[in-house]
Structures are given as structure tokens and as C-alpha cells.
Length: 183
Image (tube, rainbow, N blue to C red; front, side, top):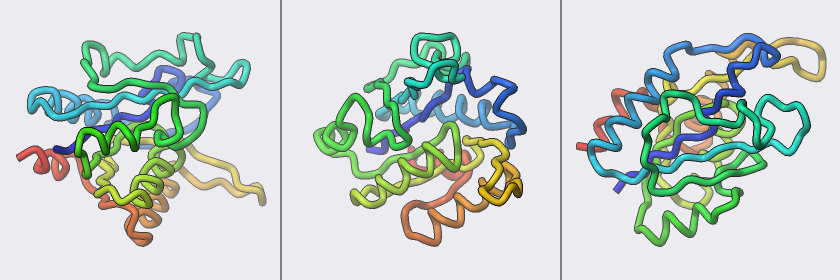
């Protein structure tokens, strides 16, 4: 079995305060993965970031904390919240749940590429999972570094792919490549 873990696919990421994003096709690719996993009867996990920071675009209990429309009608095998980057450090023991189901391979998609998706992939890799990241089913935003320079969302996405691949944490794939895991 291969579990699909959709991370933080939330309305708050549409907030213009977050700035320029990349990969406008991400939501469509997330929906493609969701539909394929549901049709195949494979395990689906939805993770939601409930920010404890007042006025955050993802503040718990607000419209921004709700899942995006692409996830409407989803019937997850597991759904939980988290307050930190890694889905392995949420309100549920994800590692324990996956282990209990005999799941050793996970596919990650969601928001943000270089934050919660990358952190979850790193921890998953450290825990011994065969991790696949559907990079075209993720997106992120431009970020300003400590020296004032700006890294574009595309640059950050490429850096995540390099970090995860080069560090041996995950296989970087496209949505179409990941779908072959269901075969």
C-alpha cells in the first residue's frame, strides 16, 4: 500500500499577503492525485495546519484554515491538524498510524513546497519510509533571506527538490510518475 498525504491544502494560502507563488497547476495536480487514490482505494491522509498565531492566514477556526475546494468530498482514512511544519509532529501519531497499517511508502503533495512538504519528507525519510514527492502538486512563495535578497518560489522549489534528492530523503516525481505507483 501507498499512502497519499496531502499537506496543508488550505484556503489561507490564497491570501495576497503571502506574495508571489509558483506552480499555478498545483491544485489541479493535487485533485488528480486525490481522485486517483480514492478510485484505487489506497490510504488517504489529510493534514491541516492550524496556526496559533493571531491574524495568520491559517489561524485555526478561520476561513483560511479550511481546506481548498479541490478537497471537497474527500473521504480520508485519517485527518488531523498540526501546529508545526512536519506532519509527523501533529495531533495524531502519523508514524504510529502508518506503521499500524503496514504502510512503508508515502506520497506527499501540498503547500508549501519548501516548508511543510519538505520537512515532512525529511522526517519520513529519516523514519525509513520510501518517500515520493509529487513536486508539480506543490507550491510555495518568494522569500526574503537574512541579507535582504529574495529567492523566488521557483528557486525555492528547485532547492527543495535538490535537498530531498541529494540528501536521499525522497524521490522527486511528477504527478503522472506518482500515479504509476498505484499500478
